[in-house]
Length: 446
Ligand code: NDP
Ligand code: HSE
Image 1: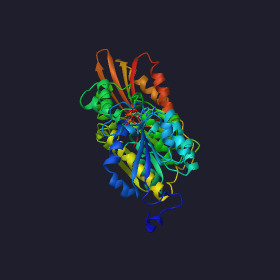
Image 2: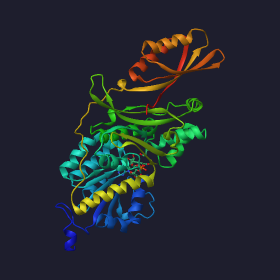
Image 3: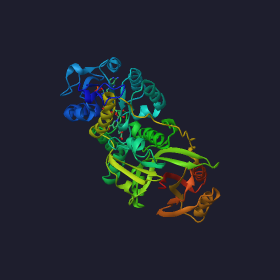
Image 4: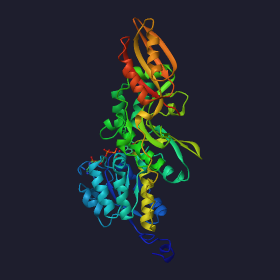
């Protein structure tokens, strides 16, 4: 190694020109692209890092599957042994799940390896434990790909906006559900067919329940809220509703009223009744006016709005799922972690100094679109209006459509608290003239 190169290295660096060993855990939709791009871009990566990277081994569950271009001797089912190898510096976890990758990631960190993961479920469930292990070992723990795949929102919150105060983060962070809702709205595809296609295209999780029930988006919301508000928010803290109950009729009704239905993740600061500042993170289907930029985010694309005190409103848009876009984010982290291995130093750990209290979901205020079947007779509207008035919730619009003996009533409220809305729906359901509350869908306040 040349003397002038060695001079650029901090205490714990391997030194410029040193090879960085990579262990790749998982070679599915994401892992296969990570492997391909590491090899295709090897010369550039070596320049960017200050030394070459070399994949030392690839952990999979079945070594007999055909994997074109992957030397058989790299494949192993013993991920535990792979992450502990002396010649491994950076471990890339793209297996998925929680318990098994948690064991592997902790073993890797404890052995002094930096870790790059795309696994939002793992990070949203165990961030504190993983961060503590990374801290103790003085290594990096990076997870850019865990939120919105190719969109560099984690780095933007961790670094670019570190000098600002984030007020709200909201947007579409799940590609599979956006693909399904878009297909149902634009082509009239069935929910089942759209989900099958999203799975075929590699957007869905191994168990797509995580996508359609909103769990994947909730994990991402937990990560975004933690980074944006310097407060630990975990998956269990996020109120979560998915899209499995959204019907073709809901989509048609929304369309007719000038809205698209999108699954939004919303993280915001709220002022509590005690005047203190709280944070809330939630995921639910939301009506978005057709003219709003989020309404034109189609297919598996994601878009995230960040409202910051000094920066104002920022919007980030891009590929939110799929092997290639996710590999881009994973490899950005690999280059960062490898650079630190070569030159020494580490990125600052996630900081949760603000430790803001979490607001109960009942305290959240939003507007509601309520679709009911009611008896078509005098006095019904007055009885329904009274239920809202008694709860102190004012109505913005009321629309009635005749359907023979029954009328369809669509009410849009002004901003109201979740707790009050819950009570209103319970009371509406007790009225003899309300045959059914067909759906209650929120409208975003932003
Ligand atoms: P896949 O299901 O396509 O791939 C999983 C890989 O893990 C496979 O190669 C599988 O092996 C391997 N694997 C499974 N179990 C084990 C085990 N016990 N030991 C060793 N290897 C194992 O998942 P994806 O690539 O889609 O996703 C990986 C991660 O990336 C997940 O955390 C996901 O949430 C995240 N992610 C995915 C995105 C996407 O668009 N797909 C986007 C952003 C993040 P084998 O090949 O033998 O079956
Ligand atoms: N299943 C996830 C999605 C992958 O559909 O958004 C990207 O995180």
